[in-house]
Structures are given as C-alpha cells and as structure tokens.
Image (cartoon, rainbow, N blue to C red):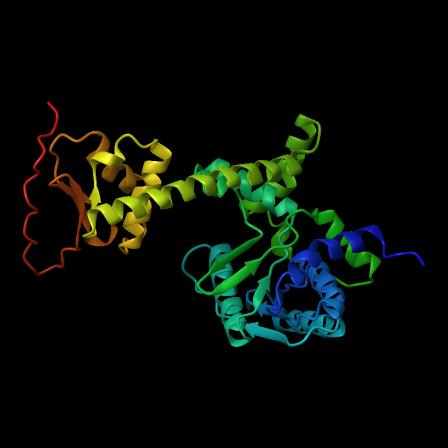
Length: 346
C-alpha cells in the first residue's frame, strides 16, 4: 500500500517528534492560510496515534470585511479534521502603532489566554523555513542585534506559554502542496500580498532577487545561518549566566564587583550586565544604556551616575556597581553613594 504524497509525509514527519515528546495538550493557531492549515492537518493525523489532545484556535481580528465569516469557515475546516476544541476568539486591535504589529500583539495575547484556559496547552504556530529567512533578513537590515538575526526558535516558553514552531525546516511551497494533496481549502489573506508591508516586499522582491543573483538556495542558507548563530549565542548566554551568579554571590548585596568584569570578553561582560539589570527589574533596556553602564567598568575615570529607563541609575562606588532606585518626582534625591575606595586611573 502506497503512503501519503511527499508533501503530506513531510508535514507529518515534521510534527511527529515534538508532538510525541510531551503529553501536554496542543492548540494550533490557524488563520486559514496554507501554512497553518497544513500544520493543523498534520497534527490532527498524528494525534490519533500519539495520544495527545490537539485543538485549534482561530483569531478574528475584525480588520477586514467578512472576517467573522472567514473565521467561521476556518473553524469548520478544523472541526472536520477532527480537532477539539476548536475556538474562534474575536479580538480588538488598538489603533495606536502600525496595524501589523498591533494585530500581532492582540493575536498572541488571545492565543496565550486560550492556552492558559485549556490546561496550559502548547501553542503550535505555522512559521516555515521561508518565514525564518525573512526574519533573518529583517534583523540584518534593522541592525537589531544577533538575537534577531538568529531568528525564531522551535520552542520558547514565555509567560507560562510554550510556543512551538515545528515547521521551521519546511518550505512554504510544501505546505501549500500538502493542502492541495489533501483537498483542503485555504484562505489567502490579502495583507500577505500588500507591498505596503516590509515583510511582503522581502518575500516578493528581495528574496527572489537574492535567489537570482546568488544562484539559489538563499532561504535555506539564511535559516542555517540562524541555527548556527543561535548555538553560539546560547553558549555565550550560558557563560554569562554562570559568571553573573559567581559575581553576585561574591558581592552578596545586590551590587556587582567592577574589577572582575573588566577582563571578561565584551560579549560576555555585556551579557552579565544585562542579566544583572534585568534581574533588578530595569525596563526597556537598550544598547545605549548597556554601553553607558559598561563605561563604569572599562573606562572608569571617576564619572558619576549612568541613567537608565524607568528613572533608575547605576554608579560605581567602593569598587562595585550599585543600582540606585528610580527618583520619584516631588521627592528629594536619594543620598549619594559612598565615595569610591579605589582611585580612578589617571
């Protein structure tokens, strides 16, 4: 007896290991597009033998005419695949900020709420290798740091929700072929063809041009680069976490010894400083703030406080970095830290 068509088999193979790795239930985030429908169909098939409950969520953003009707069609398709429960969650997308970002924020909040309400279910997302390549290009173009260039991860826990992307090794053409092979109707969101959005232009203009100029294989190469970079970043994060734990234990008072930080490689030192400040609750920490704090270690000349988001600040005093609490308006300034015991270099 012949097996399923190659595209269908590829989807099922992609979801099988992760689905069987945990008994935790799964909710598929499904827009009705080819990627998420193919993911839902593969999970529905594999769930029969994996013994893992698999349901689905479709989010109605209410931004396009007929969105509620389309969400209903998607829910009916998901029910027909045998998924349960199938939820339709309407959301209100705020008008502030760009529509794409605001819709994404509202969608992820709705998915997180659905996961929490259904036993802490994993949320399966239909991002593909092509989405990964686009993400890497966006990170490169925006200069937003190596983590953005490292792209999306297959599993990420955030706020108690496990976001699962089992299709990061699958091409977008494969998901569309799998839907066609199974006779599954898909919805092509007009926003995904609107050149007003940067990601659409990357998809329809930039990546095809790169494929032509470089002779093909660009999307897999970008995704492979993200995987390699993520391994390096994870290793650096681990080294920094161990160093931060050691230095924090040495200080014992919430501060951080300054001198042992100086000889550390810059990539590790900045991670130590970032981990220390984030653990202390400093919000919206940017590279400019981090480099300002770093000067208290690497270019110490007796300078004063470095201001941070939220009104907090860092000073170097008695050989340590000390985090000062935010100064509230209408209150007197906090007392100055003790004078440094070490003399700054000439």
